[in-house]
Length: 287
Image 1 (cartoon, rainbow, N blue to C red):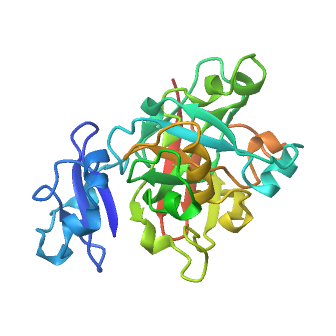
Image 2 (image 1 turned 90 degrees about the vertical axis):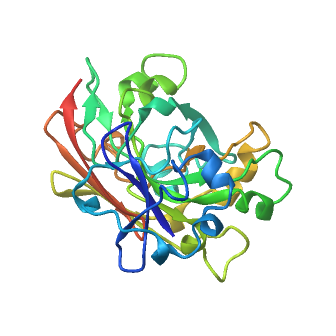
């Protein structure tokens, strides 16, 4: 299933899409797509999508982030072999983990604010995990996979000077306002699964990002170092993951930090997509 939230910020309506891509109103089932809804097995809760009323005019409405109020946003850095290579970093032997302020989460087509005094605002197309079941000390990859409700797209926007040149942790360059556009859809894990892989395996998904129409990133999740189920298993040994939490899983090569393109400025237009998960587009504006 594909879920979304549409409408003005703070007043979004939860929807699910039928086989024809028509938005069906979920308010008879749930008031929100949040941790409580995800923990209750959303596929079972929704049942027959066609019995739900059509949300008229949904295509004309703003698309919000597909998950309301994530409790936390956990991120994994340098999780693609080609991205590690372009930044001159060694392949990590364990996931590199940092946090983003959950208030960075905005809709997939909302404006992104270039921070004041920013010189190095960068883009990162990422596959994002949405947690659907509490993950605490998962004992196996299969246990971890069972905690994944689904996937969506994140743009892990980063200010590289703040991140790496100002001392302290990466969070300063990752938690600026609007720095985590999310969506457009939450796609349930069964639609992304690799039917021939081990528990939690996903099929390879192409990932693309353009800036002002020029291709900057063109990669695949097949180049991941740590796969989603492995990430959830690993994180659950250090923190409790709750339904509605989001994990940004890393980006392929092609970021400005790699030296091949200028950093973002006000007026730039960024478009990104992941196979089967939809498309985002943001305009950069000055904070």
